[in-house]
Length: 149
Ligand code: CA2
Image (tube, rainbow, N blue to C red; front, side, top):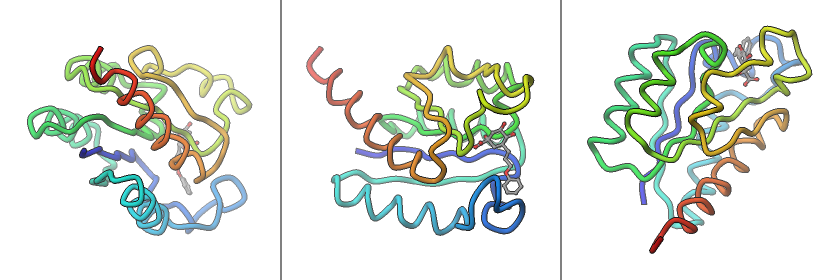
């Protein structure tokens, strides 16, 4: 089973800038570790980071076309602004888990609202890079539960 892992704008700076907020591990390292975990769960992942809204939307469409089973997305700042990203997720109708490194509900008011949350299976927020592992397990469990339904 193939899953797409998407990371939005500025997440390429992970481990390089603001480590006190986002931690010391680079996105590349986080994605490498996730691929190992996925492998041990018999899952295949493809990871993609972009600073451009349209690129992320194209990847969501590709996930549908190429029969990925689900999506894990950290939409970064687009979480709070992008109706287009939300429309793409609801349009492809693939189970999607939203993940944030920081607890967006404990931060500035403008981060409390997510355009993505209503079209996601659920949201994981505040557990740092461990959130990606949680998202993987949560998505796998969700996919298992829909099998045969
Ligand atoms: O907590 C998260 O994962 C966020 O999606 C991160 C976004 C922020 O806009 C969301 O509200 C919450 C920002 C990503 C920026 O990532 C950086 C990483 C290192 C250094 C600077 C920015």
